Image 1: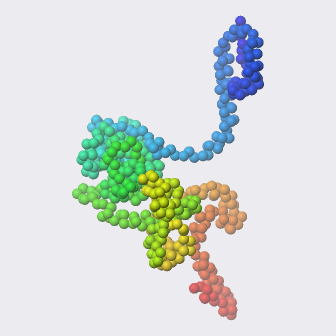
Image 2: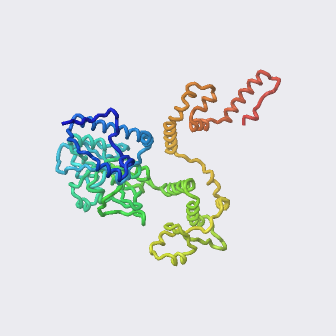
Length: 481
């Protein structure tokens, strides 16, 4: 019996595409070849050759894939992977055991202690975390550490009583301690992951629907702050169970204008934001925020959309700035749903049969006044400083500027690296000056009063010249004021 060995000296490819198989033989040729086949000889399997063939095939596939995708891989390597949607970014929860009664971890709740957000860490009078009712943000590192060691998570008696006191007694009966869980959720605003405790999904007492989304803010931010309130068509309190909710972390809630309640201490009454007048600037801030949005629209949107937005914004604005004495202003109606204009409501009613279409109508000016007209109107109303507002920055604003400057310095690494040789071995003082980032040079140029420096030079120069040549009568005092 003959043995057929498989050799690889010619390095013939071991795999083919379907096109390669049928590229040289027609269907007729194949029929002929099958008729001409001789009697097959018996084939004896050789395990060693089979293994060699398998290894060669794997190697050839790897080399083929590497050569084909090398350039493409380099392209994708530099691209940043976009963050997953909020719904998909939620990670699995940790189920808690309410049957544990001893050997708890220190209190893992995050709260204001000594005017600083930090983990409580209280070790005395600690009980099972499952006894809480509301939603709390908790220490991520503590969860990982104690869960890995099998230590049940705890809450101090002070926080337990605080949680119980701020939740309705009826709400406590709607969910059992067995439903308690710790979930790792992505903050809706900053997209960072945080750990939250809840009894079930969200809090039955403090879940809100805002702008069409179910949003859970840790309950400690809703006890005494009215940043979240009932507002027709915008927000409402939700008592039903929902399957998917978004979370907002402590820091984002406060940076967006909310306030976490700070425990007043034993024997003291809790106070609200209204009592401390913490929201007295909200109206001014909202107007400035709206102005920022209009600036964004002016810089980024299409001309058509900018005209529609301006025409709609001028309707209420002109009512405050101008009262026509003869002919009242006429308006058109714009349907934002289908991008259609209507001269009046009768025309709209004749062309639409959908009852709820009217909610998409926006009152707009039929023709936009020119930029000259608007600036003239502001001047007539004695609003002359609007185009060049005075800088009125608080201490917090200066801190923000410092942070932005620091970030710009950090992000300028590539610019500085590209000019490394000019910085290390400058050919001149001017070249050394220009080798630094423009924003940094501009910042310090603004700090230096060039005119004042020139006056100092004039003063000393005139003094020296007058002493050296008194007969010239050199004294340039008129230029120093």
